[in-house]
Length: 132
Image (cartoon, rainbow, N blue to C red; front, side, top):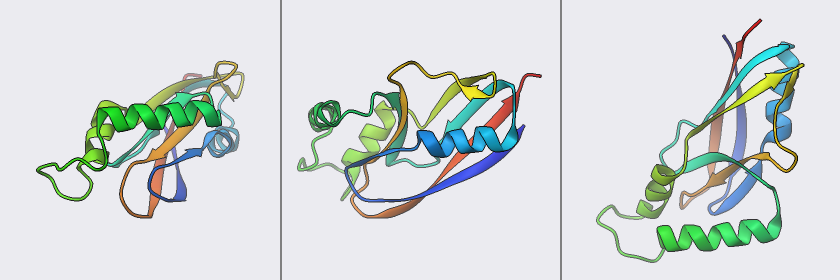
């Protein structure tokens, strides 16, 4: 098992495409066949695979607002909506590595969403499990 970390500075309610950074990690280790695990150790943000399209991201924001509205009064103060979203979506994703590259679909990108209410510096874990 091989391990690295991606650091990103985030702002509330923003999407970040981390595909290129994860690809750099895969290339760094030179694994021909394996699995790439991307894990976000956070309870207020999440990673997912999706097309990096501005219109789609606007639609996703509408979905997020329907699932966990920001302006609703919750029992947990301040950022309950971000905890709820992170519970619905995944903190991790696994992507096969084939011929030294991530095996993503044509439009798939690795996106990170910051759901918290303040700026953060996130440390996203990238674990490579060689199958060779």
